Amino acid sequence: MKVAILGAGAVGSSVAELAGEYGHAVTGLADSGSAAADADGIDVDAALTSKAEEGVVGSADPSDVLDGEYDVLVEATPTTLGDAQPGFDHVRTALERDRHVVLANKGPVAERYGDLRDLEAASDGEVLFEATVGGAMPVLSTIEDFGPDHITAARGVLNGTANFILSRMGADGLGYEHVLAEAQDLGVAEADPTFDVDGTDAALKCVIVANVLAQGEREYSLEDAEVDGIVDVPGSAIDLAKEDGRTVRLIGEVSESGAVRVGPRLVPENAALAVSGTRNIVQLETEHAGRLNVSGRGAGGPETATAVLADVGRLAD
Amino acid sequence: MSDSSDEVNAYTIRLELVDEPGELLRALHPIADNGGNLLSIFHERGNLTPRGHIPVEVDLEATPERFETIVEALRSEEFTIIQAGADRYGEALTVVLSGHLVETDLSDTLSQIHQSGNATVTDLSLSAPEGTDDVSSARLRLATEADAAEDTLAAIRDIAAQKDLCVVEPLTAGGDA
Image 1 (cartoon, rainbow over the protein chains, first blue to last red):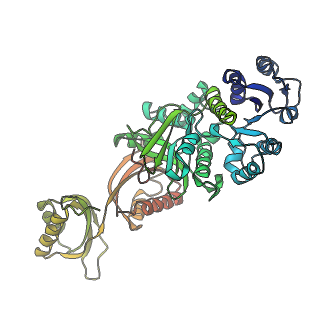
Image 2 (image 1 turned 90 degrees about the vertical axis):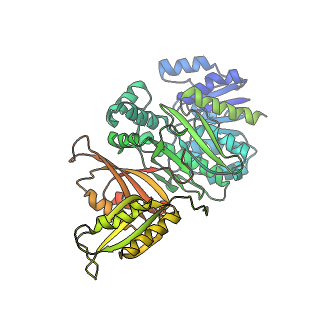
Image 3 (image 1 turned 180 degrees about the vertical axis):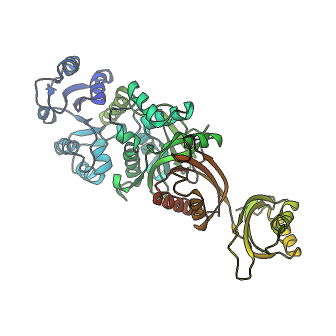
């Protein structure tokens, strides 16, 4: 498959690096201001070196990539809320050209699911977005394999930064600000961790799961989610939970009634849901097979890139 | 719901006590002596009934058979029973509240939760490592009527929102692990 990649951050760069290993050619790579494009395949190493050393991917324009040659467009630009632009227009352009789209950008799937599906219906191209939920974990493909009709509810830990902070606070009795600073030093938390700690990132993922489970019967966006973060959870709350054999985790859930909620929850200390560090987990309640746990690395460049490339592989079949 | 008589349920008994020393203790004996496990006692001192009695609400756990024995024993001791067992507190919930608990009047918070109608606070632990003037946390154990857990949590969310408190809720039904 010929793959063009929009977004040259951690995920986009990793997709470019790993695409060859998965048997795909990269015909374009673009960040917000520069690009490398070649219908026969770009020199990925040169483009990434140029990006690292000179701050530009190459001498081409990002629009050359979007309008250039590819079978699959990988949309890995930063997630934006509301109209989900410019990611949404990238998807539109590719689908109107009857190309496939693989999203790592959560915006279009969480905020404009109906619009996205309409564009897909009018196109010969397909849209896949495994990478938008749970990084390397096969959450959406598992739901797809089981059939959304046979899954009644989903819940899980879907933000590694928040989980790292809560597990450190619990293990060492440290305060929120202290652990956040440590997480930033370790590169676990970004300089601006707002979306991670206020629950927005986990909520976007839950909204995407809700959209997949609803199969078009109901459309969800971030507005439909009830979201609380972990900023106001003091160490004393975690201490009291521990005395009671529990701990606190930021849990996102899509309930049987279809309600989407994210917030700090009491979880039994030894429960599968009480993953530690940056690990993520999703529990699916199935109709005939009880509870299914999918756990693993929920973020990171190469991790998320494997989910993108798994989607590209599905489109190639 | 199983019909097994071995099953322990939570019950509420509402009594009216004569305002005399030792009456509360005397009322608790028939419960303890007949195998009831006391969960909480809500003693509304200063809030007399029209008959000049003191209303008391007792939550307890017992098998259905033992509960009947307890009620009979209370009646034979000539206590006034206003209500017995009509509310079946089927579920225990644990929540943690954090914020300026003391400043926002913790006892008012608790009585608001109680007055929300569906729940009784059966246990409370407070942690205020920075002193009571600062942010503190309280872990509440609540007994709620079967199927009322969601309503109780909704009421707690409302109260917490009014007082700008953070609620750490339990997982909802089915999410025990």
